[in-house]
Structure formats: structure tokens, C-alpha cells
Image (tube, rainbow, N blue to C red; front, side):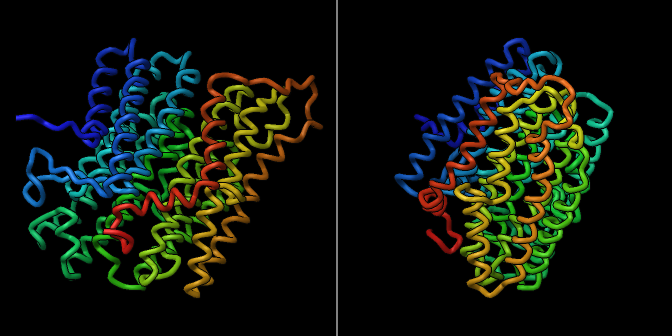
Length: 483
């Protein structure tokens, strides 16, 4: 019997086998990693062509479909997330070749952990089964905690421990929700959820799973672990954690809202208020941050909140359109935040510190990294023509059309805060009056600069391609768009 090779199988198992090989052969880990990423990217491109030509693609594993077996499914949104993960991950890996070249131990464990992380994320984007999603988010958590503590400092270890506690608690809550679903329906596949009547058991299950995912996403007020974890990890690890890891849990929230709708307008408003709290609190803390990477980490808290504001922008009746704004902001944040963390790492490496108030005292000016940071800030602030601007515009347009002006006010407040805290850094880049030595304006040009600059330019350029991008993510996505 012939077995058809599927790009969905390759997207999950190639990085898994790559992680095992990189662990077994640490001297060749970087070459194994890059080869695996290239092959996985090829599988994603193959899958994207299939989805573009055929619409949503379904694959029953082992020939056994749901509810007895597990189905893998790819549509426009899942392929867009796979493409984001592959593209950002590949460029972060290129940057890691340079930034970790003098840290043999970090380099040895970075590649297997990163490839294991990629396995879990690709599994999330292709899964249609709640228990399978639980397994994949645990794989992600295992690798993400390892990447957090990779540099071995006391602060990183403490942050990794907090991350591990939050992740374990979030996973347990999610698993309890999965158990409630199974007790009520006797199945865990998305198709079974779609036809179920809303009941007390399903509401409890949705609440448990949402709180568990909110812990993993670091949604306010459950964000306590994120700033320290992202700020104390190595630059490549921070870029992966902020640019990619939190997106997996955000994606699951979108999928659950598709198949298990929020039972009331009040609950959806509460989710929006949690997002608004994150926008304001994260912005205030970013204004107070003393270190560059800590500022970038707090801005992640704020921008995660904005994604939930986008999701709630037009209430329960507007969910069929609001997911598009949330998806655009997820993609924009993934690209721009990875660029910003890599640029912040380059600035710290060249100057020797990342204390914001002393950035303008250094005679060394890593101008390319500073320029990259500024480009990424344009997208995260939401200035045209960036993809971040398109996402924010979509958010406000939908909120105004539905008469939800309070979400417009929250978005504008978040934008002003982001201008304020990023201006703290950008102003330091432009000041030279406190320097007491000759200024080396062109320090820091290296291979590690190419990856963040490419990502920052992509964050701007993707805004010009927003219309075809939206058309693609709608393919096969049954959230009131296409079956």
C-alpha cells in the first residue's frame, strides 16, 4: 500500500527529527538546524500552494478521522501562521549564528530547543483536536522555558522558574476544560464542538481553557511572568518567545471562539477590558522601564492586550469580522517584535549595556541596529504604511461602525503610550551632546544585523500587501467567511 507524503506531516515531523539530530550531534547542530528550517519552509510553501488551489485541506492521521482518530487541517489562517513561524524563525536562526558564536554551551542547546519549539507550534496550527492542542502547547512550554534559561544567569533562572509555574498552571486549567468538554460531548474534535448546544458544562470548559491560555499568553492581569522572562533571555530566544511563542496560544483562542462562541456579550466585553488593562498597564510600565529589553518586553504585554481589544471591537455580532483585525495584529506583532528584540540585543552587545538613560553616553553607535529598532517601532506604534497600521485601522474602523467608541479610545491611548515609551529610546539614539569621546557612528555592522533589518522592513512592506494577505487568510476559514 502506498503512503502519500503530505506537507502537513512534514511540517510537524521534520523539526521533531531535526531536534533529535541536533541534540545527538551538537557540533553539527547549527547546520542541522538550518537544513531542517529550510526543509520545513519548503513544506509550508507546498502546503500554501495546496490551500491556494484547493481551499482548506484535511488529512486524517493513519486513515482514521475524527472522532476516533485525529485530523490535521490547513486553511488560510493556519498557513499564514505557519509561514510567520518559518520566516521569522529562519531569520532569528541566522542572527543566532553570530550572536551565539562565542557561547558554546548556549549554541549547543539553542538548536534542539528551537526545533522542538517549532514542532509544537506547527502542531498547534494544524491540529483540530483539543487534546492534541494540549500536547502541543506542553511541547512549546518545555522548549520555551529551556530557551528562557539558556544564558544561565540568576535573573534568567528566576524568570524561567516563574514562566514554568505559570505554564504548568495554565496547562492544568486547559486540560480541565478539555475534560469537561469530553464529559459533555464524548469527543474532542472541532467538528463535534461546532454542532454542540451551549450549556453550563461547555461554558465552564470555555472559561477554564480561556484562563489557562490567558496565563500562557500573559494577558493582563495574568502577565506577571512575561516581562522578566523575555527581558532576561538571550536576544534570539527573546525574539522567538515574543515574536512566535505567545502567538500559538492566541491562535488557539481564535479557534475556540470559532467553534465555542462566547456565550454572552458581557463575557466578550470582559475579555476586551482585560485587553484594555494590558494596553494601559503595559504602556505605563514600559514608560518606567530602565532597561531596553525590559521596555520591549512590557510593550509586548500592551500589544497582546490590543489584540484582545481587536477581538472584542464590535461585540458578539461582529466576531465574524473582528477576527481579521486580530489576525492582522498577530502577524504584524510577530514580525516587528522579533526584529525589535534582535535589534535590542545587537545594541546591548555593541554598547555593553542596555540601560536606557545611558544609551546616549556611549561613543559607539550601532547605527544599523538603531535604524532597525526605529523601523520596528513604526509598525508597533501603528504608523502607515506598516502592517501594524492596517491592523489598528481595521480595529478602529470596525469599532466605529458598531458604535463601540470606547475601544477606539483605548486604541488611541495605547498608541500615544507607545509613542511615548519608544520615543525615550529613539531620542537617546539621536543625542550626541553627552558623549565625551569620538563617536564611532558605524559600529556594529555584522551578519546579526541582516536578520532584524529584514524583519523590520517586512513589517513595513507587509502593510502594502494587506489586501491579498487578508484574502489568503480567509481561505477555508469557516468563521462566517468561507466553508
